[in-house]
Length: 213
Image (spheres, one colour):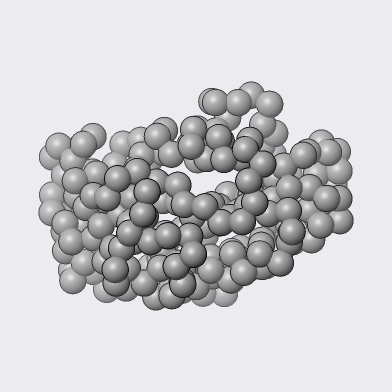
């Protein structure tokens, strides 16, 4: 996502991890003070559900503590915060979710992202963007035929996120495209992709996290 956004707007400042570690609030404060931004787009996250299940402490540190560090700095300087969240905050039982629908995360990745959302809600000048995207070339050999989503390729989602960042919106919004199975999404750019069922994996997968668009 960061690389796609940089292609769209060369005014974006994107320090590398070794200079701005969100778990080191002092390094973040120094970088942010030097650049004096109007907006911070917080897209850093530990995103793999099976890895989060195996290492929940790292997921908590990055997705919750790191988020709280950035909220603190934004609050100190009155900087607008954009928090990139996930469709996985929903349990996937009904699909077509609106921003006002209650969340119910079903795995540790989603739980930590939901906690980050709640932290961001405590800051008046924040926008929470729930979204889902994958690499421009589908990265796996198989894709779920029985999981439904509003996910799309990152080159499609990135311009929509940038538009939201520049809009001045606050609160919670959903960004995605039409409902489809993950298999249907994958096959658009990877015709040889093979079928996979959610029952074939050993981690919890919400069945339908599509958005009401």
